[in-house]
Image (cartoon, rainbow, N blue to C red):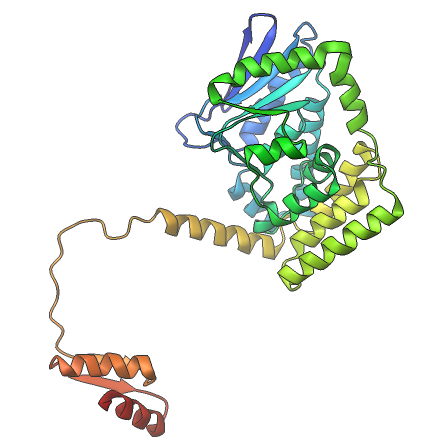
Length: 359
């Protein structure tokens, strides 16, 4: 067990669940973390005496960075059954959270990405801090789609147009945008998140509003054929224009949204799982995840370590290629008295390089 979560009961029978991965700068949703959360949900399903549940991160300014990309990259060599099991486990857990016997509110401070966003979409409401909080579903950037309910739950909260834009672009949303589009109930100062969360639980309990919201969000979105045709014709054209057909994930995400939103949420989630199999574990996804890790490593590389170094003498240089740059490098060394040799594929190109070096 990973011991990432901490549960406590506040005054008024309000549960507070905190995620805080020990020894790590960010929280991620790997297998062990999901298993621990599943065990907690088992207990919470029996706690019908609770008035509500609040969910927060124990890392100031950092919520959940998403699923564990190392584990997702490893699915490139997995069988179809193993991929379906990995996708289905997240679906099953988040669906259970969405059906807990009391209202639930996520308190988001900082970056909430990918699987973390899909987790909070399974809560009844979300409150964000008004500082540097960003919420995103960036899966398409690593060749995936939001495969733990994102393509189905988000449109039922924000409407189809904002959901399509957010999912196919992977762009992070600011606190103000989250409130405007319906993704978040409110944006408040970080030190007010807990008190506002308790207040929202009270609002949700009035006239069983949380139950009415759940019923509504489990239904088909109810778009007409004309609305569907227009929305997806425009969106598919925009995606093709940006990706030039080289990246299948944005189109797969559109497919999941299109095929699922006019079904019940339960059936829509099944559609999402099937579409996820088209990209999870693919070579393109594995390569994009690899590129992500390499870019992250380069970004963290401090460069020269600061150890004192002395220059080595240069007595002679060789230049491969006699284009403008190669000729310039050779000429610059010759002017400083350092012999230079230029090499190219034929004498004509070497002649061009010598002429350029004399200028």
